[in-house]
Length: 312
Length: 116
Image (cartoon, rainbow over all chains, first blue to last red; front, side):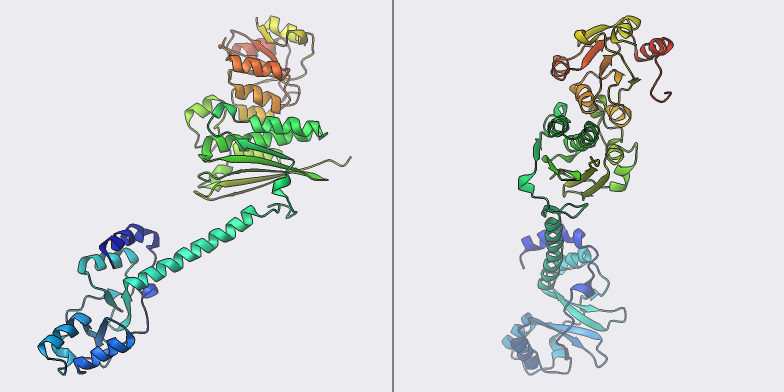
């Protein structure tokens, strides 16, 4: 494995900090005892397609290691029928079961070996660990993350209401408005347009007002905080109005805090406009009949409101 | 109390909605924080504010306010005036500070919505 790859690995090591040597290592280890011949080690390497063999004693304690380089040297010096004991590396650099990924990568960097035996606290051999094992494990992890994202996306993008579960045809939303996130002075424009749209549709003015207020706050949040692009969608159903305010921005890091009245991360210039007092989400809650917020750091925010229409 | 009475009490100037000065004001309040207006205002209310941004007018539109009274003699941006005109809102300006404006109207008998 190239040094460049090592660098890349070490760059991401902290993300996988909780990975331990015992999670990464290959547990089925081919071993030999020190009294076996070097030629046997060569055969084993050939058959198993491996480049190093840990040498253990009768108790399976690690006492040495023999690598393909040692075999080549033995070939050159005609020592192939000697005992492994004679040429094996006795000062074995090994990993402990509990070593975490950053320290493992550090060891790879430091010693430039292709593999490390993994031992427990009593020096019993438990496995062997190569950089390929690390790659596999990291790919597995990424796959998990990827699957998680896939799953989440399928939830986020599905045409079902997050609250009521009913079908929402996104393409046929009665109202669509792109939020201009570049101009703070235009925040609330979408909410105002939506409100007059609802009035024109014959929606009760009290309900249209509630929609306007809740969406105003959501829209302002998108403009102030998201650092992404956003959209307002509205669906008028028989008995309710469903509104989605979505953005692809930085997400809400701490939703619990954001839900609290008075908690705000807004800068001063936003406060001068009369916002940023930590009333956004509380106001949304106050005026919507139902509210769901889905957000995660760096994964955008999706707000869905339900406003029930009164029986006529 | 009518709009024209209020204008007189606070020594104000009607910037937008001169044709509506004979309308009755049913409820009144004061806030600089638009989220408070969104949260607590009632439809048809007149709001005293130091906020001259278009956000103030847009908040007024969304919450169905009657209009805004801009206090502290602030310069009102043309965009704000324009938006108020388009939305048929009343826009009044006074040189009095927020506290004095509220005080004058309160002593003239106008009570807040929490006292109704």
